[in-house]
Length: 324
Image (cartoon, rainbow, N blue to C red; front, side, top):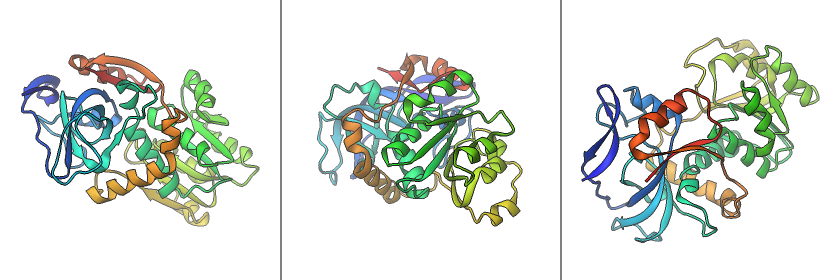
């Protein structure tokens, strides 16, 4: 048995649950730290996140720790390895995940807490910026919702991959002021109705090449205005709502590629490839510490409810982490 944070009838609670056993292609990890993500709030409210969620579900989409056991078809990973992983059920003393979602923690004094901030941000934003957004060296990019952990990583990845102009948005003045620390050349305030004009001005009247949107509903039409002809908009998150107005005529007039992405409907093989491509482009920068995220606050596993409440209050900058 082990301790885990599960969805209960009246919120999240720590319970004793069976310790998982790895399948042939899986890795069992003794978890030392778990990163919080917005999807955890969705599941904590009782709603599913893809196939995972509902009453009794264990929360947690990323974690770091030591490998305890590997499945019969796993190679290149062994017991005792210090690893960071994406997966499900990471708010627990032990967790399993597919071998393709496991990476060794760089031997550069990176702590488990630091490592637990990285898997979701790295794979989500590399996929959004590079694969779906098709960012090319010398192009411009706007990250909507840039002060979140995933957003801050998006800024850094864009700069690392050679973007000529990186813009990031935040509705909070204090957090907006810090975006330049993470690669933003210009910070955008989307509470100002004229924000698309600021983007167009910054891009010398052309509009931005790529928009990675974590907000959606309230900025959807502004994105269409701010994008250039033949621009790409990648719908990564819907923090501002799941539905809203959309100017179909402007979308067509600018011939914009509007691309939806989610891990909820991806196969194991697709996720393995997403992680492989991410490591090809980014792992040297991870190992040298060039790509890293600030830690806003840590909580012990037993205080997961308080940690989630801190995230829901939307007052954090960077990542919130549960530690053991």
